[in-house]
Length: 170
Image: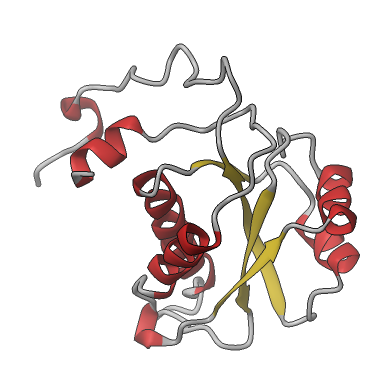
């Protein structure tokens, strides 16, 4: 699919069928995340693929937003392996993991796999429930699956501000 079509047609799916994500497609999605740029090429991300009933139940306990997705990617970054920017106020962890997550989401759309970016949960509690290492911080969850019958973008999906409202040339 053309990139313009991928970004135009991708939406946050909020109702999934029970159909599992094909392993080859899942691997392609994960490979796209691996290719994402990171500061100083630190590659501080770690992706957990959650598919077992036990761990999906932990996701469901943490958020009402799994929407029945058969696969959830937990995108984390190693807090001890980030680049601290000049001034010391920010580091690369959140932005690098966000770039990785965006690659995952767009690769899913390109592969015909629906997704939804989730951030409505307590990351520290979920990390503890999943038994993740203490040095890793959860950035977000990415639901993956195939839309159920009747699912589709929200009514406001295609409403966008004009560039004149969001871009300035200085």
